[in-house]
Length: 503
Image 1 (tube, rainbow, N blue to C red):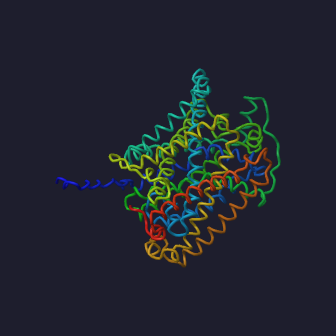
Image 2: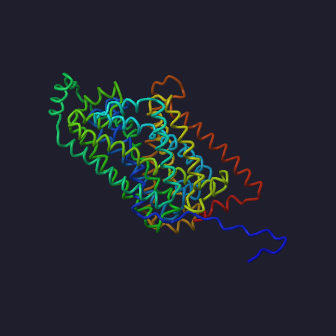
Image 3: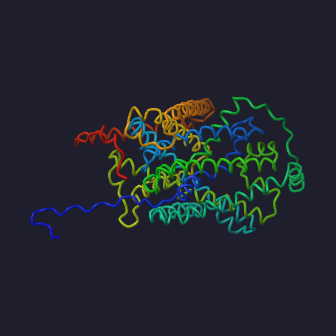
């Protein structure tokens, strides 16, 4: 129909996100965001960063799973009532407070983008180790050069960007097979670890390097050792919240989001325990602790002492795959946070643009990848990567704590949304769960912060707490500027944050 003379043509409706992601894709998003460098590095480098943990890594891992499990239940409750893109931001802004929801998710977005950059940069050393194990010395040497490492890191990151931009179907076709491949190759480590014992490792070490395993007595497990170690190991469980961020693209979200969160947390938790137990079953902890004090150690590097070269190639390749598959899943999560802010008008509106063909938030994906690119470039001058892990742990502990508080405050803040809860709808079940989550997460946050501010550091900017506060301050400036603009335009902010974004 022709437009009448003098009348502006009607604006074409903008495409929304495509609700095409099934349960398996959601589970793969959670699993692939959680299993990465953490399982291959953190359970062993913990010997350096939590002195005295010794043979008690597995109990610390079990304790670290407690806040993750409680936070996962809180997420499941909230996801069943608010299945929208940007999950954690939407939950806190509707159930608790828009400002708290934004600044907490802003620090989460920043730290995860930096983590994506770090993961991209760490892929190349694992590829180098594959080349070394395969006897390709020239290739391994080439991968050591700065320009080549930088180019490969950027190529992996922007390949993940392309997959994310091309839509949910393309994303699922990549991420689901990578999830199963990660479990399969990780299973090789588990079988290999339980196939050897400490005596076999001591014999291999003596034969290869002519030295013995250090003789060190184990210290008793005390709260002063357990709590800081568990707070660091908690970083390994970060990632399942990516499922909630995909709430705007899930089919049957009221059922699939909570179910996917539960499946991913349980399956990854079991995998972590078996993986860690297997490596410590084969490699004596005094050796791991001694090596960790002198250099960075990984699961493939430790088991390589016992395995033939072909199997070493397999387990190092498994570690590389575990890193590579992190990228598309983590990018999906962080980009949906930005998209949700922009939809609410508290971030530049252009970030909410949806690709007309692929129906993905391409502007948010590109902006998040830009920040991750800065993370890659920063790795050229970065020191200990545990500083980045510390910032991420602080951000996620605060975020998870707000999710638990949101479960408590939702009925009083937004009774209509509270009636939509389908997971654990009884308040007699919700309140004890959320109260326990608040207590445990607050404990972990307190221990983690105390460890950070009391540990020796060359300068204040080598501490995660002040850096996290700076990020929160930057988020506050953005929030205040954008909400002031909305008020000048006459927007009723109370009404906007009382309802869910379009979905």
